[in-house]
Image 1 (cartoon, helix red, strand yellow):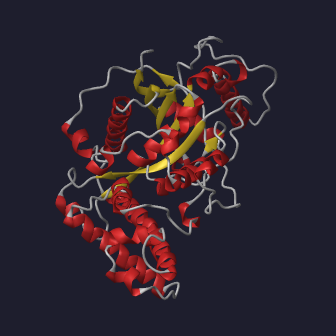
Image 2 (tube, one colour; image 1 turned 90 degrees about the vertical axis):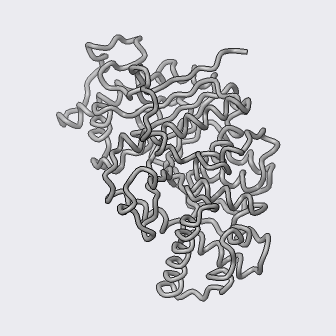
Image 3 (cartoon, one colour; image 1 turned 135 degrees about the horizontal axis):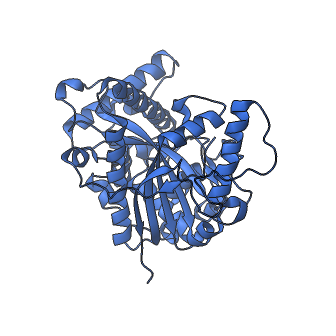
Length: 404
């Protein structure tokens, strides 16, 4: 269940960036991503529209049967979003190893007869173009798409195994992601994007405990929002262009977590103006509704697994070609416009009301007795305070854009 309404509180000023954080902040450091401009709605292409549909509907890239990239620069950008630098010989070797392992699986386990050009001979940058029917035959299009999907899974599996081997704390990795997202926010502001407020926070121990006690799955592995970013844009029409910029600069669309998107602000069918989707499925991957949110609460809320390079931080002997140099960090993103943000703080949609409902359910579950009557605010919290002083996310930063 995705929670789309939680606490924030002021924290001490953020410390100066350490050498560790500078080295680790590698998500958006590649030039291929820094050069991506912020685009207006009319500048979206079909690949953009398909990535946005996937995010807004909570679908899985594994269900796709094609891409719609235009040229080699798109191939390089997709690699950069997945933390690969095509100009690095080591990264090219790692990509080819993933390709070989994917071919082995498809041929030996699934007994598929892959086209030799796709399996071995083609330059890897050509595979996304083949999957988009820009070059090659119809069979090569299908084979390239299948091969890329298996490589996508293998990259994630290897990264998860690498994470268990390395002596890296969650705090270090969170700081890495935070610094990369801050860099993206700075770029958004510099390009004139209509982001008026930006916050980043981490769940506190009390907040994690409440979430574990209220969920059916009492496993910390199912808590996706320990690290959270919140962006507020000027108008609802600014949401899609801002999401598109995030997908081009920061969030690999293929690692948006399926079934964890809450979208009550944007109709994905509006993207059909850029071309009808040939990829959307009817399977439906909507998350369980958050029973504690108010009926009028509106937000775009999604979870993404963000790749973080660690080769400049850990000792060389701790890395090998078989597992690569990338680990993943789950992060939650919330996007909404100014008017919606204000409306969300009124009545039953307010955060105080949300937390009171959540705490009442925890007490009910702990005592095995139904709650009776109106739930009173805790003694440390006034009814109109707007925040819980006991259980909140640790707000690490907040930037508000001054009015024009």
